[in-house]
Length: 300
Image (cartoon, rainbow, N blue to C red; front, side):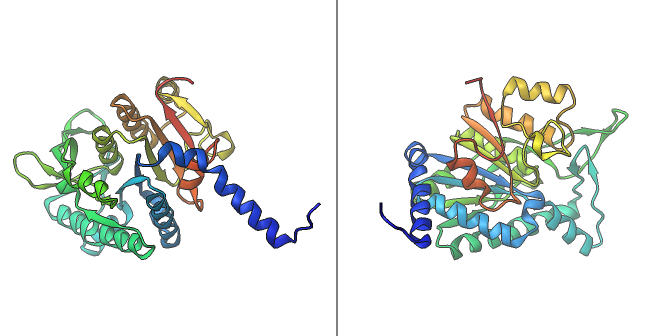
């Protein structure tokens, strides 16, 4: 019997963890992962840096990550500093002509370059791409609680994606980092786009093996106030049933619908994970049970 000290034991345990990742490395090498993150998951700079480092690791391991980021709170702060009030209708930010310049400047001029620099600081090969060069949009026509049309300004849905810059970057093993803005069809003016919907629209074109939403909730829960009720896996039909019976509500509803749209278009799996946990992305990808909720096309 070999007598091993605690240091060697720890090293062996670390090596075992690496070996345990082998099946996932074999399955996903050269495959595309589309990662969307935003909300409170972006508020802690330390967590964002750790997430960027983990995505650099995926790049180094031969995966093809694509990032779509949000930035709602930073936009609200920039608008407040400019004397503009943040207003929302049906979860969408009312974006006046004055506000859209702030949205564009904050997303593509501040947040996006900052994320690219973080990525490069860890040795990654990231490139920032304004969403206006990727997403083609049309204005959203919203209604108020009484069903009357209401103008929410420069806000759009994605109706098409121009993916040449992304595919070119991936061919060079460079990670694209994309902001959620669209160019309006016809006018070419910028439109503010919900980042979840932008990520789903891009996933429908790229058809990644995984579309991963990183936010500030653990996943889909039977009781939103109790993380122990986390649902590990649901099919498309089961997810819609959870909306119908009220289990899923609020901001999770558009996330679920966007996930199902992506699955219907050929994405293999969609994951919802908690960005407040260290290494949450790696735990979801490289462990058999994962750490959040996966939405799949059919029951295994």
